[in-house]
Length: 258
Image (cartoon, rainbow, N blue to C red; front, side, top):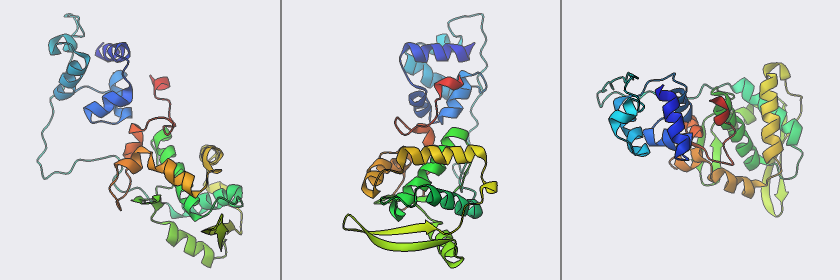
């Protein structure tokens, strides 16, 4: 079977799924479908893999066994004017869930001296993007843009202003080690009926890993994550890029899924 043959060659050459997915221009989950035999290769992809593994195309196509026939789908050429479809183009917004996630985060770590607005931005970013990498589903689905200090949730100001107006949070401005800091404290408990057990567990995991970092540490840490590194200044970060993460940012064990 070609799928097992590819997996065997990848391991023989000590190559990662991430590397081959990047070489083929696809996401890691899509590449994993190839190794599981759930997705056929295009001719271009097959030729690329044969070249990477250093074997003739015909040997690769036959998995070194002439009795095995491998069907390879021909690529369909698309007009240049046709846009390439991606799984997530504009994330589905869920502002009510945004509020409850924010209240939950504030109830857990909002009282920490280091957790001001800048740290909150990064915590929300990792909650959203880590969840998407783990489950290939949207959580909050906020839009995060690339700025000098790291990922910034576009919807944050609208949500927080509404929550302040409704008496759900209070804004406190002060200093943290001589730096101006804007903090938010929760005035009501989060509605946990809106969050699933899996979502709460996920938030707790992110907070356990990152909530002790200060604003500068979070800035530096977020700047090395692939979604931020590959985005253009002032433009939205792509959720799809989480599938190209390296350690320590990747939160999904792809090898266990084979």
